[in-house]
Image (tube, rainbow, N blue to C red):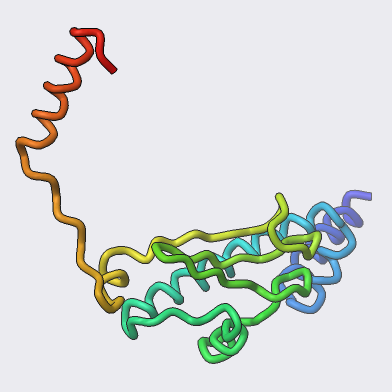
Length: 157
């Protein structure tokens, strides 16, 4: 009995190193499969977001949501997550999001896997007409605080 058990453990270990048999073994255990898919999608989303940021820092532009599939192909990323849905991209004025719809294959649900990246001042400065906000003069904050305290002590709002 011990020999059979040892043989099965060794055979299972060897089978996990072979990619084709690894997927078949993982599919036999649904909870293991779900965890593996989630981790794979998390790694992919994280790497895609890093590549988008790097590309944007170099070129000064971000891909458009409608062109994201082509951007993924051009940058050697698969367009589909482990559940067969397309990765998505949302561009916001100060940030962007790369995501996977997750196991339910529906966007904007609790099981989505999303990676938010801020575009940062370098990317913002590339926009036409951008100028960083000026800090307030040093005395403005102090005098505003003093006026508020004086008004509070007099009972004013």
